[in-house]
Image (cartoon, rainbow, N blue to C red; front, side, top):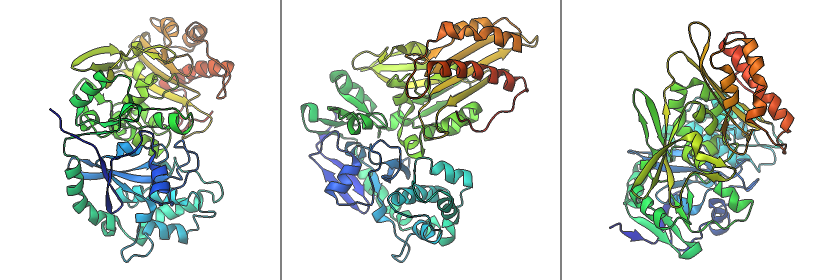
Length: 488
């Protein structure tokens, strides 16, 4: 029998916090500013886009505390059990003066109005702790989720590249605090379930994965929250009630990645950031897409399972995973079943998931030798933007130059992520040639009838999809040069 306690406990800067009366939709930003009067974190967008509210959240991984930059405007307080939250107010130098990141920003004139500056500092602080001497590309990647309207980014990047000249992480007070904090965080993560409130105001933090499965089977009406990158917007933008809520972002069983000779298995709680190293190793064509999923803070929060489970037609992960032949593992209580990922998406807003059933993991087969694979994202902004469309292409061409297999999948072209089966049929058994490609183009009209919306017209989407097939052909035959960045 799982023991139950009625308090969410975590460490805020240098103090342990115990909360016994909080609402499911209380965001960390609101709690910091309104309850704790810590107003360094700013609200700019309330949707995780601008980074002005960035804080660090540390969690125990093995025997180390790992700190991630996150956007506090869409992070719920109920998800913080057993973590260490670090805000801009906690930064300080060795002798109590400005922190090296702050001093670098001052000396390199990285701030004007100052509204966005705390978020930039916290993002750079997280980067500095894991990479004291980052490349310019690493700095740009760390700041993808931080927007500035008045300074321009050049002085901020100069500050980022100079910050280690003001001090190294080993001398940072937080570095020393980690030793003490590990014991506190371990004591909080004591294997007990947390329950606060009743009815629609109920918060549940399961003790472990099996406990979560039992709870959700009994309460299928509950909202599951892992990274909150979607659910956070339900609250801040649509004013929706989300209770009762089951927070699962802490479950280590869902943070696993299993690897063998034939496949990778990502459990549902693996974040984009955690998945990238192995994806880049086995599927290099995924790296560019993955680094364009939102910004660093959202990649640290958002999970593969969440992106699949919500069934969005413009989710970034389903098209490439469908093209790769991924399988989805679903669980309800003790019962598990496996389906093809492409079969999970039934219609707009409807997925093959029964009440009380959740996505436990997704298995991705290794790409067989000789197969070509690429994925392309078209969006209005190069980075930190939702897809207008996302196309994934996989093909095997035999020694005779004939297409033996083709799998093509798109997001943003239909009500669900969907394969281009008519196009595939026009390619298989034909020579891998420009003539074959042009003959297959017409089949896109059979597979897709895209809509016109704020991101693009139907005609644009149709033409872009056709051109991506042409591009894939040119790249696989050496006639085109792979672009390192794509903008539409």
